[in-house]
Structures are given as structure tokens and as C-alpha cells.
Image 1 (tube, one colour):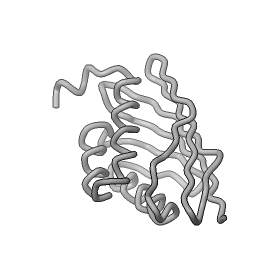
Image 2: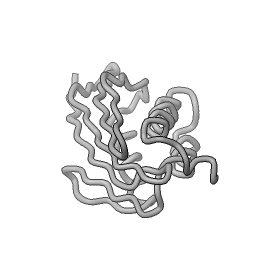
Image 3: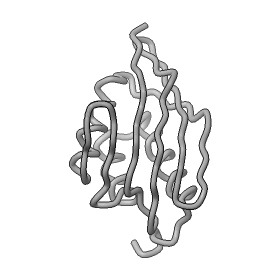
Image 4: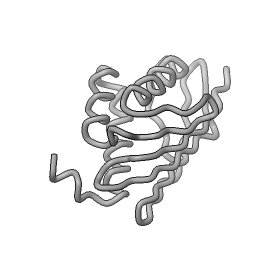
Length: 127
């Protein structure tokens, strides 16, 4: 795992996003655990309009909520990805036959090859 510590913020972000889109073809729990192991710090703090979530267990809770809200598990469309220094920004959309997200925005703080803080915003619209 030491080889993961030296990654840039962009490398961590790209790995995280590639794993996230694997939910189309792989079991959700497997990709979630891989992402946690590779890219998420044990002490992560995630801020979302639903509250503050901490650690891997908090990320698991949020990931399962998202999976329930986006039931067909189609690929995300990453419309803008940027990283500078320790900070990353993602804009994303999602669409399946029942719901869509047009305004997804996540921000990341990355240190030592892991995401240590994240903010998340998105609105799920029924079709």
C-alpha cells in the first residue's frame, strides 16, 4: 500500500472515479471495499446536506444511499474533473430509465494518496 501514498491528487481522484463506474459490471460491495482500501482515509469526513459522515462506515452508508437512489447502476458522466495540489473537484451527471441527476458536484481534500475530506451535492429527479 506504500505505493499508493505517493500519488497526486489527480491520480487518486482518477482511481476513485474509475472504480465508481465499475458498479455497472461488478458487485457493488466489492467495488466499494476496493475504493475504501485504495483511496479513502480511515478518518475521512464527508459533508452532505444529509449530515456529517465519518470514517469508512460513514462512506459505506452514503454509498448505499446513492446506490438505492440510482437503482439501475448505470455509468456516471464526469463532465468536469480538476485537481490542483491537495484539492479536487468533480462535476457529474447520471441518467437511467427512472431517475436523473443533472447537478452532481463533489469536492475532495487529498493527502498522502487518500481522500481525507469530501463534500457532496446532487439532486435526484424522477423521470
